[in-house]
Image (cartoon, rainbow, N blue to C red; front, side, top):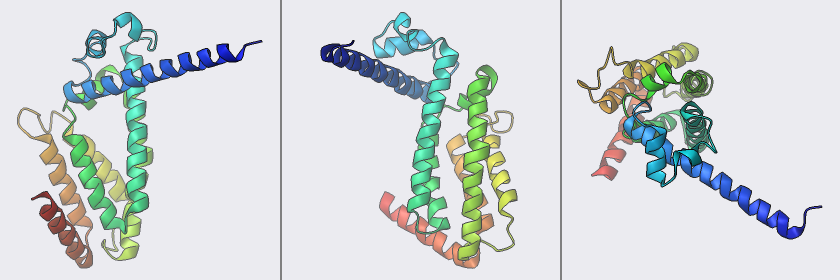
Amino acid sequence: METLKESIVSFVYLRKKVENKEKIIAEAGEMFMRYGVRSVTMDDVGRELGMSKKTLYQFFTNKDDLVLEVSKAHIEHERVEFGAVEAKSDNALNEFFTLTKCVRRSMQRVNPSLLFDLQKYHPSSWDLFLDFKLNFIRAMVERNVRKGIEEGYYRKEMNPEVLAKVRMEQVQMVFDPKIFSPAEYDLVEVQMQVLDHFIHGLLSDKGRELYHTYRKQSESINK
C-alpha cells in the first residue's frame, strides 16, 4: 500500500509533469502564432524552453501531436473568451463590437501562414479548427443576429442562418493567399474592413446610431 510520503511525491511529480506540458504548449503556441507552424521545428521549441528534443518527445509523439495539443488549447481559450463576451454584453451590437476588438487583438499576433500550414500539413488540427468555426463560431454569430433583430439594432429582413454562414466564409477567405497575398495586403486591416462591412450590412437606423456611438467611445479611449 502506498504511504503518505509516496503519495505526496507522486502528486508533486505528476503536477510538475502537467506544468511542464502546459509550459511547452504555451511556448509552442506563441511561436506558431508568430512564425507560422511549418517554420518552427521541435528543436526550435526545445531551444526556446531550454529543453532537449528528447524531453519534448516525453510529452508529445511528434510535431503533429504538439500542433494538435496547441490547437486544442487555443480553441478552448477562444471558447472561454468569446463565451464571456456573449454573457456580459448589454446587447447584440455591444457583443459584436467587443468581439471585433478581440479579433483585432488576436489577428495582430497571427502569422498569415498559420491557417494555410494547418490545412496543408496538419489535417487533424485543421479539422479541429473547422469544427470550432462551423459549430461554435457560426452558432454564436447566428444567435447574435437573431438577438440583434429582436432588439431592433439589425434589419428585420435578415436571415440569421445565411448571414452566419456568410460571415464564416468571409473570415476564411481573407486567409486565402490566392485572394489576399500577405505580401500585398495587411491581413489585419483586410479582416477588419470585411468585418466592418458585414456589420454595416446588418444595421438598422437605430443600430447604426448606436454603432457609431461605440466607435466614438473607442476612438476616444485609444487617443
